Image 1 (cartoon, rainbow, N blue to C red):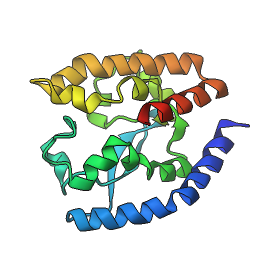
Image 2: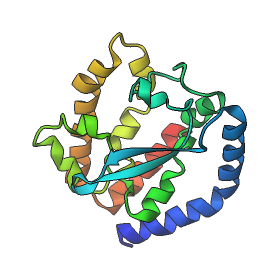
Image 3: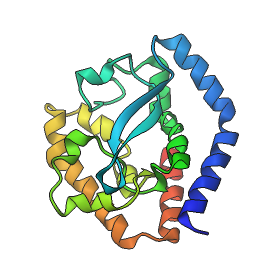
Length: 195
């Protein structure tokens, strides 16, 4: 089975299976706070092209005007239902739509915002040669990234100097090793890590 067929087939299946959750979360988000149900943000995809990434909104309206990084589940901008969605990565479910649209794959380097992509060196820019994904080695390794940043004095400096380079190294490792078996292993490990 090709990666493209796998992505489309399983994202369609996911949307069908999780459609009741989409409805429930949409209602809860609307009740919990003012604003849109979905959060969309421009991210950088394959070949350095921008696209809109979709998530369930887990923060107050216009939260990203106060900063791009989220610093732990205690971040004041996170809504009540948003804490639950983020804890179990359920806010990421709308990215199944990104996969169907062809912006993303199930497995691949997590797409970054332009501000941080501009800091990549030539070696790191290789991550832009593949389609970004819903999960990857870095997502598993840094599943508690928000909590790590929440414990630091200067979250953005720690992200740029320490976490981002480490994640990019793992992304490059994925690109060097990528095959269908590796993708299945990453998906399985991601599910186990979340549970």
